[in-house]
Image 1: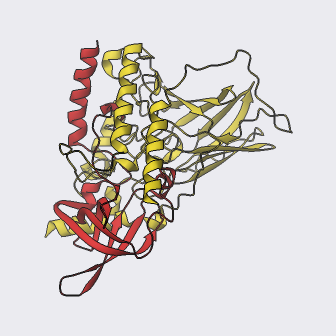
Image 2: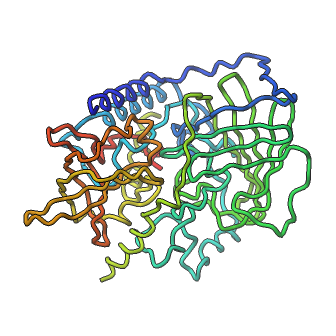
Image 3: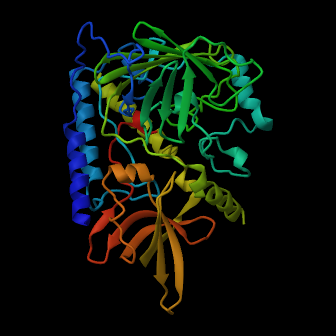
Length: 332
Length: 137
């Protein structure tokens, strides 16, 4: 049995190694199939790939794709990582630390895309407004907004809502991270459902042109309305709380946890470009937080073998208990 | 250009090392790297729960007393995708766990490795050689 397990691990490593992405083969004038009621049919499983950084390394400037040499380097790194992940024993010079074991994580597949952020053209987050800087600094009596664990846990409130298994928000749920990057699209007449694996979100999005709910109603996942522009599904989401952050796990958004204001509006565009490829673009508009809008592009690839599994996170969250009690024990 | 990329990666790697942002929950928040544990015990239960699965084992102390321990694993979803099935770890199997004890002093540990008595090892921890720093999340 364990032998089989090793074989599977080996096979996994091999798949990672061999799964060098082919250059996008987008047939011109490709027309997606239609649902029986006439909408473009986007249904399927579309897992994210964590092989692309959120922000572009500054030295790449406005270059959106890697050179052959840079790409080869990234492929080689992925190969070495896959080999390390499949080892039965850590090599003697490996520091076996307290971090999660390597077999826990999905490594992603290297691609030529230099960053998820495609606008601004430098692939980096725009500056915060002075108002947002002040808000971050002064929040919670000067403690700042909750994020990842930073050495203190006086209360559950010191940790963000991803730690607390509440949500990763609209974009955080799609931005690929260490594991559980499954997405699923299901359609019905007048509706589309976008389901994300980690923490488990399922947005049921009306397509019938109805107005947003009252502006006084604020939600972690906002209020989404969709419509078709040709074969592109456009979804506009408003009515956000300011309690969540984009990439609220700190993952996909290194450094700042990405808190936004209640004014946030997200415009997502789902464009099928071939049978197995769906371009997901999302524009973040919140002039109270960022000095200009910014846009990410995530290329989703169909994988009918991928199973989006349930993620009953809260029920099994021993970590919060361990973190808080661990902090109390450390104080003694 | 490539040299610049490498330099940037090294710099970013050093930042990433000092601020580990790896997983759903910070390990350093829960577990104590000054308290490594070596446990030999029999599997009594496997909890396939998110965000992390847990292996339960009964450990016989030298004086014959039996204590129960919980060992943290990855998320069930990724374990399944990596080939770990319900049968991979059978009830009653004797395993050796290397890991780190919970800071709160309870009988919980983060499992770095799980080894069967005959030396077969289920998985190992902490070897992340050179993933590009900007992808360490």
